[in-house]
Amino acid sequence: MAKARSKAYRDGLKIRRRWLGKAYVDKAFREADDFTIDLQHYVTEHGWGASWARGVLPMKTRAFMNLAMISALNRPHELEIHLRAALRNGMSRREIKEVFLHVATYCGAPAAIDGFRLAQKVFAGEKRPRA
Image (tube, rainbow, N blue to C red; front, side, top):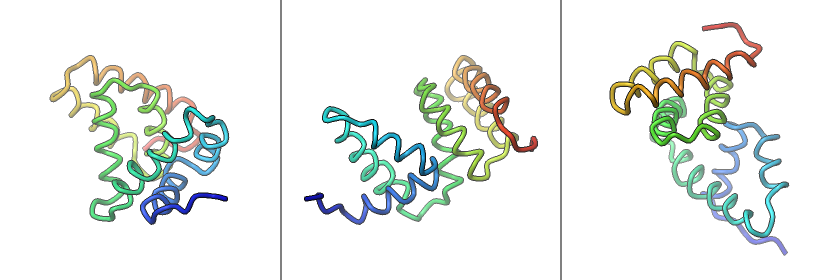
């Protein structure tokens, strides 16, 4: 019998799928094992449901914050995922550039340089025109 999920979990799953893409999220759950499945549920409920789904800040504002914080934390795998999501959900290259220039001021040039490098990689694989 499946465990009943909270409203935060259900809202988080909806937003996570919308933001990252249904295929990406479903794959994360499908590939989870007994060791990692609880992390998928945790991130869905607490990260996406209790944070992203609050409705106070616009999604684009959360995307700006995510790119800056993940860049500052030097988490390239997560930064790449959120760069792709930000582009898919309406952030422009120009806006992303401004995030990383701001990162340079508050987190240092190395963090910004890595952000720019990763963004160039993501942009190179993108199909939409430059903005």
